[in-house]
Length: 224
Ligand code: PRT
Ligand code: MG
Image 1 (cartoon, protein in one colour):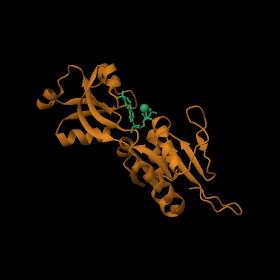
Image 2 (cartoon, rainbow, N blue to C red):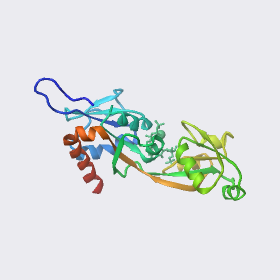
Image 3 (cartoon, rainbow, N blue to C red):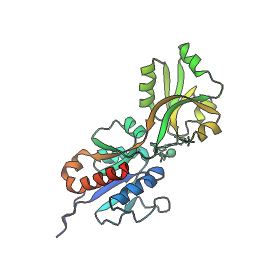
Image 4 (spheres, rainbow, N blue to C red):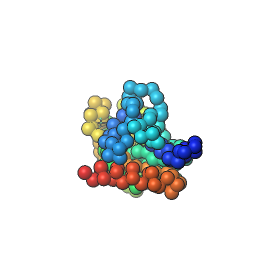
């Protein structure tokens, strides 16, 4: 939590953690509502720390799954992360005051076309399920009494059933195009996903004067 201590400078520095791609793009209008405009686009710049038009506000570009970690440890004061990412992280040290209603999608169970999922479940089969979201998947199948062996993956879950690694996957679905292109079908809806504003709990106390107006501007922009 960097506070500017140089002579005559009492302004608190605010660091915002964002991932590039849809989260950065969809957070831009919310930042604009708070009067914050990044000076560079992470898609074209290789910089990982991006300045903004506000001298005391900067954006750090991190992997989507790393956003909660940066905010938890105070390396960033606030950040934007998907509900999927926040559940897997656990939310320790984070205050999540706002559903920003951006980067919306659905967490689904999907299987290869032709696999009779309902019948396999009815027969009490033990299913191999590949996912990046093992915590969410474990809770979902436990609540339904379905026996599963979970296989943790870090990317391209759609490949797992096609390559014979698993019977099913738990993944995010937006348009459904990726499932379709890989001959998979969604068979169960686990939850709706959107992104949240997360705030470091200590920052909220120490920097409330600077942070609260940003949180309020985000809230106002979401309601519109
Ligand atoms: O891509 P990278 O591995 O670096 O990280 P990431 O996938 O975690 O980041 P990013 O930027 O892709 O996603 C950030 C957040 O956006 C996620 O944590 C979600 O909360 C949200 N989000 C919204 C999505 C999607 N929609 C989405 N469609 N995240 C991922 N996808 C993927 C999905 O996993 C699947 O592979 O897109 C594919 C399906 O899309 P459709 O449109 O073909 O159904
Ligand atoms: Mg991605």
